Image (tube, rainbow, N blue to C red; front, side):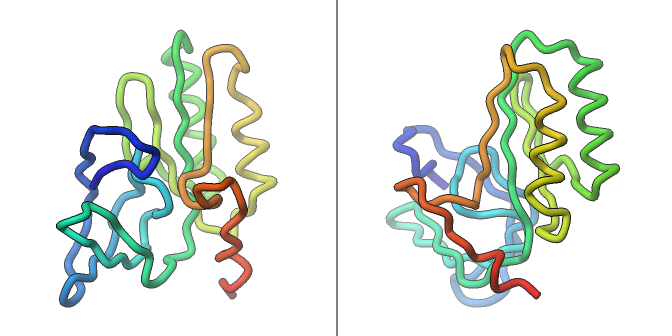
Length: 142
């Protein structure tokens, strides 16, 4: 899938087919915005775009880091697991996390606040639309 932020690189997203043209997202992607693990998407091969058909109840977070000691990142990942999150992907300077929405935004943001301010940027992968407005899908999750 192509990133929706105008990037030219393709990203392979881990999915399982569920029916004609619909796929269950297995791992939250690092660059493709708007989706998270557990979502069911419709994928348009021609346009290389995905549309969420059903939300899976997970929040995707991408943490970009540079010059952060490896032990700090390892501790951060362990703390993410402690509050109910999991690591869905990792590159040299990126960690992709998935949290059940029940963990809550305050807990996720408190965890992220433990990272050093210098050399770290993070963003939610499926919380805001292209204009920066909240998607609010989590209000429909019981």
